[in-house]
Structure formats: structure tokens, C-alpha cells
Length: 313
Image (tube, rainbow, N blue to C red):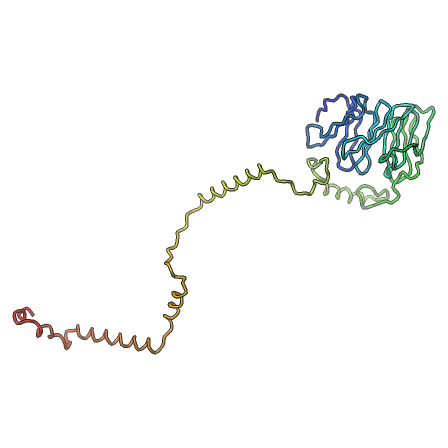
């Protein structure tokens, strides 16, 4: 529940294009509300202090029509929130307003009903499309067009009257849209309800511009900076908690080309390497034989020693 703080509100209608709710107040102000906001999105002073008695919005959500106690019907462009033109009514206050599917504007005032052509909303027309009088029925309270038919219903003190307005209803019926097929059976109605529940959007997504749904949100530099700082802190925290890995001691130059070729040539065996190995083994055998007790050179150090030192051998 939200308080408008603009006095009593007796008129309410919903924009069929973006689902924004329009409220008409007794001080001549029209406010636009969304479920996601505690304050009105837009405030428009439409009738300069005269109470708002009726409201209507076309199918495209571009034009809004307001009827005030000053006996004026004003046309507003919701793209600029500016008045384009107005019509004056006689015989009573415009208490009933409605726009048909083809753009016919119906106004109920006093015991009269006036209908303006499809182009009367975009461009000011000189004369109305049709007029209808109901003497003795009292003032008109409501006026509504019937969808997909050229029929308009008028509610007054004596009951309800229906009149034919040629060209007011949509002739081409699109049965694929939700809850539009008038000839649907129980199964189709049940499937339509399930599809509508699956396609239902969150109330927080209702906005003045319906094109924002499904687009990428523009990034705020301050929020982006805070996000980067949070990511850096988290990465540092993870790095501190991770166990340190033992570093490998790599020898310098192991990956050089000459070292690699040298390691490969170690495994190559040719005739020269075999001769070198045999010569080395023979030298080792001779050294062992010389060091053994029965060797040939065992007495060589004693013979070469001076005469004074021979007694120590």
C-alpha cells in the first residue's frame, strides 16, 4: 500500500503497453505508479485543479486521454508527457472515456455519447465521428467498447445500452494471443492459463520503458570498482590459505640445444667408444695387478731406495 498524498483517487486505469497504473486525483493531477516504487514515477498536472473524472489509454501506450470536471477532454503524449490538443464537451462532465481497438475515442458526458474518429487522438479533428443521445436515461456513468466487435456499451442510471459504432473493433482476430480467442474450449483455456503463468514476469520488472526487459544493464563505475576490489581480496585470501608448493631446483642450461645434443650423443655407441672402453678396462686391470702382493713391481721401491733406508723395507 502506497500513499499518494494528493487527495482522494476515484479514477484508475492500467497502461496495456507497460502495465503502469495511472491514477486520477481530485486536484487535477495524474500519477503513474509501479509496484517496484514507493513514490510515483511521474506526476502530471492535467486539469489545473479540476478533479479528474475519467481516464483512457490507447493500445500502443503512447497517448493518454483525461476527462476533468472543467468539461475538457485533453490528449497527452506519454513519450514527452505533454498535451497535444483538447476537446470541449457540453451537456455534462465527461464521466466515461474509452478507446477502441481501432482508435475510436468514446466520451460519455451527461445524457450524450460522442465518438471521435481514429485520427482524432493524433491530430485534432473538427467534427466528431458519431453522436448518440439518451434522453430520460440520466447521466452516463461508464462507456466501454467491446473487443473484436463494432459495439459500444453505455452504462447509465436506467441500465445499460449498446449501440453499433462501425469500424471500432479489430476485424482480424489473432487467436495465438493470450485470452483472446472467444471460441476457445476448456482445454485451450487451461493451456492458456498455464502458458500465462510460465511467461509471467516479476512485478519488479514493470517500468516506464518496457524495452528495458531483456537488455544488458549499464555498468556503474563505482560498483565496478567495488566488484574488482572484492575479487582481488578474495583471490589474495585464497592464495594465503593455499599450502605452499615445493619449488624445484632446476639446473641452469639444461634446456640449451648443446646440452640436449650432448645428452643424446651419450647413448650413441660407435667403434671409437668401444676401443676407449677396452683401453680403460685394460689400464685398470694392470693397476690392480701391480697393487696385488704377487705383482712384478712389488720390490721396485726397495731397489730404488737409498742404502740408508733399505732397512725399513
